[in-house]
Amino acid sequence: MSVMKSGGSVASPSTSAKGARKLGARVRFGPAGWMYKDWEGIVYPRPKPRHFDQLRYIAEFFDTVEINSSFYGPPLERTAGSWVQRVKECKDFRFTAKLWKRFTHERDKAWTTGEADQVRAGFDVMMDAGRLGAVLLQFPWSFRRTEENREWLGDVVRTFRQYPLVVEVRHASWLAPEFLAALKEEGIGFVNIDQPLYHDSIGPSAHATSNVGYVRVHGRNYKDWFRDKAPVEQRYNYLYKPDELKPWAERTREIAADPGTREVYVITNNHYKGKAVANALMFKSMVTGAKVTAPNGVFEAYEDVMTGYVATHGQSGLSTADHDLLLTAGP
Image (cartoon, rainbow, N blue to C red; front, side):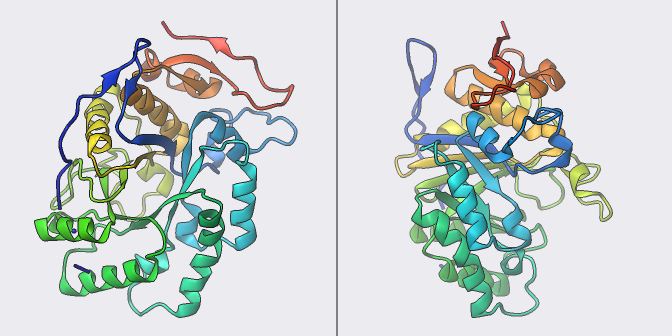
């Protein structure tokens, strides 16, 4: 693989009479995943109303969500079809999906054609429905910029070239101008990440290398990020404060202002106990300049950081008599 530029020209976003900023590209916000037991009673009501649908509920607050179950195994065709069907009323909603770890983490032997076809079976359903915004190739920190790894990445890109691809690398060796230039030449997006910074970790950035921009914040849980026996929920147990998100809001606006950017996806991966939902809503408010609606439980749990960014909180607009009415909140 032969990809880079940083950010592009920064255009000051205009502001409407109501205070909402106009951005050059569409910016979508959402959490990584939606099926977490520890979200019950915080993101989701408890007890849940009859026929409650977690995905449909999340789509009431966000216009994207990152599918993380696809990292552990490729989604079946019928599963992907169910996801598409459940958001059919949200015409602007898009999924992003993590590529199966067989292609990013299990690199001891070459994958098979059958394994690639398994991935395509589910992804094609979302792509054909116009619901797949990006496929995330997430590589670990240990994936460094060596000749062998460059070849592996190139093979992955060629295998799944029919999808809008974005690449997340975490080791600083990839921050070479020729790599960023190659991404741009190939039309592959660079994933700008926030992560605990250790030796040779990639720091904050605002690179725009394709028409799909991508921002992904993991939290800053230094204690558990590299701890071998740390449960996955603890690794992502972090709540961003407003002053930690504001620089990322500015980077997001910079990416959106790049003339080559059509869409930007902002994903919060600090999912433990709904912190990703709280921070994604705050992020959206910071970037757009407009206050947002939040689930009751999320606002109650994280009111100290969300105050000033939330206009209303409640159980969303789902058509069920069991949902609470929206209540006016915030200053």
